[in-house]
Figure (cartoon, rainbow, N blue to C red):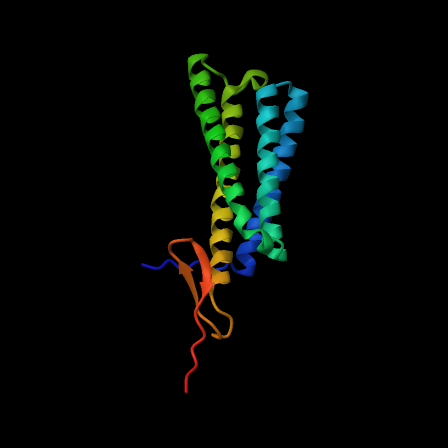
Length: 174
């Protein structure tokens, strides 16, 4: 079965960019607010989530501008970074939930709320997942586009032994 990757539409891409911008502003706002409240856990995870949202925003904007095309093979690094970010975010989410349960956390006390920190650890997981998912999608889309011959002039084949792309031999039709 051949899986065909479909390029995102204009509105879908705008929605992704808007959501990432909203995530960036929310993370920064929460980080700044909890600096005043003095909950260092939420401050850290709010700003950390904002960094991942910024990464997602840049990924979508660069794709829209066509600036990812020369670096399609390097998107694998973003995929791995997304996986590591998911591992960190999910681990922290579970740890904060457990801490909140063990210490009978109260949501009314924002200075020491582990549950609020768990929300922002989850948001970090979400943005890391977005980077993982869309880096993977954009990479597959761009590599698929690179394999499609333009105008049908030539056919491209993959050399199974070497893993490299070779062109078909010239065939003259008489």
